[in-house]
Length: 130
Image (cartoon, helix red, strand yellow):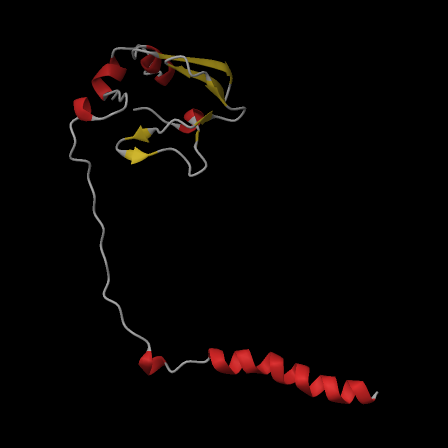
């Protein structure tokens, strides 16, 4: 019991001290200006160190039912197969990239907007073509 009387006040003081030190005066806090970041890639497609292909609405219109699968297969070096609804196999220049729930590690843009999730997955079955 004697040790409890000695240890308890010390532990209580140690727990309260960081909380008291964490309080700051709001009048001393700096106010930062807002920052707006706008970026566009100003490089021509021929100058990029990667293979890039753009499928336009006119190219999609060449196919009878505006099927993304057919449009991708018309691109050089690209082979895409739909194994079952929502399950695709994408082969880009021999890479055979595959995932059980979508296409992984291929950056997809739809109308200029990145369509790939942060984890690297792209779901082709939710793209609605005009």
